[in-house]
Length: 141
Image 1 (cartoon, rainbow, N blue to C red):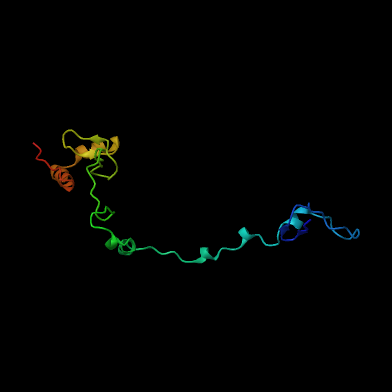
Image 2 (image 1 turned 30 degrees about the vertical axis):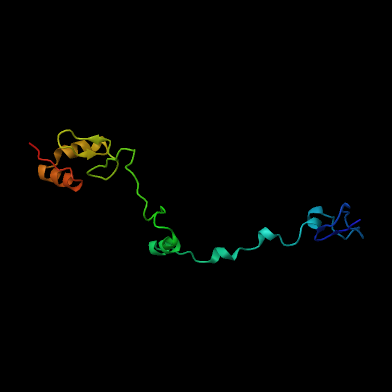
C-alpha cells in the first residue's frame, strides 16, 4: 500500500495524523497537514501590472489581414447593409435629447413640455436657422 506524503495521496491507503509527543506540541489540524504551503491560485499575477494601450483603426485593420482574403469575401470593411427596419430617431432641436413632441406651427421638435413656450417664443429667423441644421427648413406664412 502507498503512503500519504505532503504532495498528496499516493495510493488507496487512508491518511493518519502524525503522532503526538507531548503536551507542548500544538493540537493537530487536518487542514494544515493536507494543504500545501503555497496555493497555486494565490500566486501574485504580474500581468496586471502591465500598461494597457489602445489600438488605432489602422492597426486593427492591418491585424485582420484583409489583403489575404478573396475579393468577394464579406468583411467589416466592405459589407453593405440594407436600410434599417426601425424608424429614424427624432431629436430635440434645442437640447439634442430624443424628442417625442413636434410643434405643429413651426415643425420644431422638442424634448419636454417645459420647452414648448420657448419654442413658440423664438423669432422666425431663429426657427429657420435651427430647422436648417437638420435640413428641414420651411417657409413660414
